[in-house]
Image (cartoon, rainbow, N blue to C red):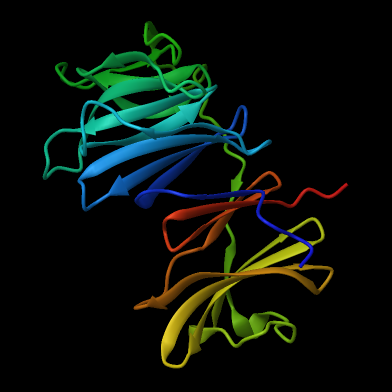
Length: 255
């Protein structure tokens, strides 16, 4: 095979969420170890594969998660209560060192703008939105949708395509359910599909370059139902998971 993963890292739990900083292509990962009831975080630079930090823990063992990432800052949130999906509080983490830049447990993240996070104070009703500095947490001013523009991400998801609508003569196996996830990038075609072997449902990934198979990987085996898309593309970085615990990144940049 002509391609290989230049980032391959197995975590000590299930990858629950990934977020990409659109400014500097830094990938942040939320890992949940359900047996230990412990959540941790990792930071990886996509351009060079450098792991900036791994197994980063907060004071809250379980009830915290990734909110957003921008300009070298990872934003985390807590939860209102163990049984509630409602987010509460903000913790800003330096994306390189993992050090806490600031925290505020009375205000809650609403969304991300180019000028900084847009937040609201849980104690004030009706809700009023403010924009704050992502580096320092200080209030910049009331949220103005004209000035505080939303951030555009460069993340591309594959198309969900009926196999009958594709040229599948070069696929090594027949897709189960007749559905494939398909994406074209430069000279590459990336395909993920489910295949039934010996009454066992597997999920596989194939990469073709000019109709020639240059990479394949078995992503999940013995699964019970069809899985969602297996990969995303950020610029020329193909990102996918194996068995929900192993991160793989392939550089699809063409010279």
